[in-house]
Image 1: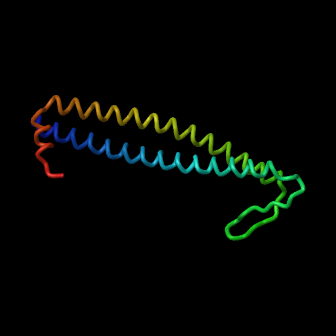
Image 2 (image 1 turned 30 degrees about the horizontal axis):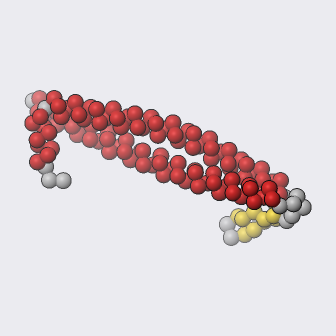
Image 3 (image 1 turned 180 degrees about the horizontal axis):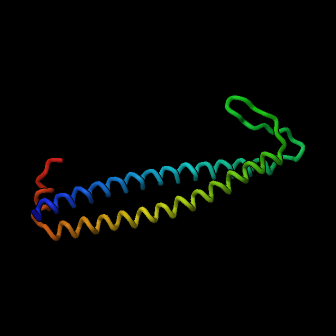
Length: 128
């Protein structure tokens, strides 16, 4: 009976670990994407700052380019930059939370294996 309970606990912990690891990878990918967006906005903003105010600037919309004022484009890039920074901060806190959850799951896993050495032997003997 205890063996079955330990096996059920193991499967539950394993599922939580897989779920948490997947969420962690998703957050890391989102962070990379936001970092790239932030960098692109920064570089575009720096290039726009170098241009005279009366220069014709164009905004890319799909495969079309639309004439916009320099001030409008600069505001858009500043907003993108700020939004990306805010998203990165939010994603960083999510990542920290997921890291804590992952550490908790790993500790639960260790405790279970220390509690039932027979289960550890069964896991090690399984073909993965």
